[in-house]
Length: 421
Ligand code: DI6
Ligand code: FE
View 1 (cartoon, rainbow, N blue to C red):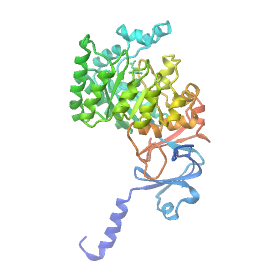
View 2 (cartoon, rainbow, N blue to C red):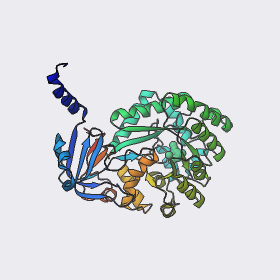
View 3 (tube, protein in one colour):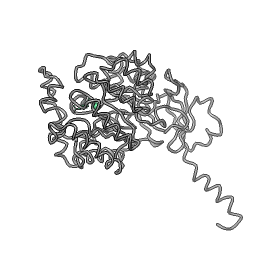
């Protein structure tokens, strides 16, 4: 190798080895969502994937010849549709048990709040989650994640909040992290302030102290990407939420909030004060809350599954959010009490039918704006430099994804440049 004559060959071999593999996806219909409006449709589209990233995106005709020739593999998509990979930016995927008996009670007239106040609701899931081991919780969570993956999931947020003790929150967040092994990006959110556990009955302030005290420990174990709270009459007050947010700020962790789901607590404005990544639910959001979110650049995460399953009638203020320029994301809110669904495609459909979002807004909500709600600027669009997370669909136009329900046109998901098997 020290022989001069072999140096050039060795150098170029090293150069070849250090250039990640390039794969050209050709003859595609691309919904790039690259600009701030419209689908960013490209027919006769091409994407050059280099390693984990998109290196080039555009029409076949515009693809520079040297890039085209550098690809080691060509995949002709025969006109199939490509979108960014789906991002579920709000789930409570790790839990034990189920709550179908509570569903029956609600159908007989009991409200979600009444059931919670009577000690059912979140508390019953806390009991089942505490009783389950880490491996049992993992075995329950994997098929849920796989169901979402079957409809194009590439990035998943998972909240804790059914453990409500340091040991049980740790257990749930560890299970959430393990889901990355399925071939996903997983972001974890600490939701210690979800409900009051029974051992703290009558001692809500002391519980908030505990939630704040556990955070540095969980963070030190690398288990926390963001901090959330349930700011609600049956959850935590704005003052208590502020204390949790201050604990997050002390560790430089971003915050999110379950805000104005059942009543207007002024939670959105509070979260915006902390530059929250997102405020979620928002059926009872006020004009002041919208203005504060717009100023802070906070994303509105709407959850049509919970709206549907709780048979809500009050709509989130979509038009006012649009007018204020607040980005709107969508998510499943998968949880056993208010949204036991596992279909991302159904969320697209429901966002249009219930919330009157356009199919384009809905798709942006599960991709571009969901990425923003997780603080992930490297994904959510098809553009050079973005992560190569994308879905290939048997559809002619992206609006079809919001149109069908109970039909899954997914052909293939590519995650970090690798086709998922
Ligand atoms: N809002 C929700 O929609 C979930 N948590 C929350 O704060 C529901 C949680 C549950 O009912 O188990
Ligand atoms: Fe939720």
